Image 1: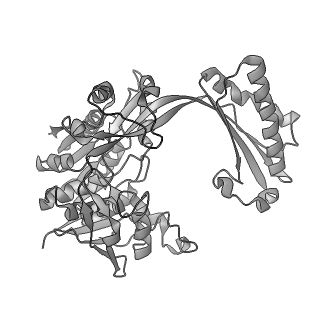
Image 2: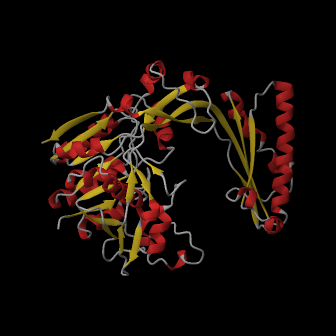
Length: 465
């Protein structure tokens, strides 16, 4: 019986590709599904695109794709391993050109496909004229409030164009914004010839793609079970998960031999429920998955059998994530040591608050929002921080940020802090230097009719000889 082995690649822009070596060398994989785009990565790529100049042209794609492929391709090519990556981000053609240059410089051969059509920024007015409201998914807000400040808008595409690119002979498929699980579902549908309305097969592929999309998190990394995380072996050499898939959609979930980490019922069920609102209706562009029918059989030895996937018809809309210019952030930071480290930070926050009020009153500062964090106490836990530990801190850092429409105000905010070193609470600590303003990008999630997006999908094939 035919099986296909798909290995996890990166789980986010900047993740390590070192464990992928083991998947290629010892994991018997035929595909690497590499997810470079988290929910907010397009915002990071947009900032990168805005920084471009003559000596460092704007990219808009995940720059780690070039060093990753140049290191892994010599291992992958002789074994026939193919890559599917959404590293194209906002500029799939730019990613392709960068990879092609690197391959040509080394005299390597490959066929590279790009999948585009996810960007709808230039079509916002056209879509609205066609009756698409593009309202904010959470608030119902009218997109006209941010229309003139939009910087990107990309729909989550499904797996079919990836499968089509592979059927045209691609060794490397570079996409823009696609659903994370589509990076795995595309190769499976291509290899097995699954029909796009075979909802249970689609659900099986979606399940496996979801389990692979976060690299080491699917094999014991970031394992949240109290006390159990410390029992995960050899984090330093953690192996990324591999799915060995049969034509009926059942799969053996495992990892390369000799690697660290853990594949078990507990580790993969945690990944299964990651970023899931309703496990009985997990929406994707390709299918709506009901996780309630899944069966995980822990076979031991870092092997779990997965079966029972069931799905319903895919939605008629696609999710779009748009980004817009949302002002500037000013930042200041000062840290204090024991004794009374927290109290010193709290007093400093009170002093800075007074100075902000004076700047607003006397100089017309337009401060829309102020945020106060105490690093070492509540910067991660927020309202869940236990106040009984607050006064026992050995050290504490005050981090304050403001949101403003005026870049000059954001630039000037950090200057309110340095003088506290000699003129504030008793100071034995650390002062963060004056930090320049950071541009803020707001996120606008919305829905759009899939037919209006998919008609513009384009696949381009380039052979590197």
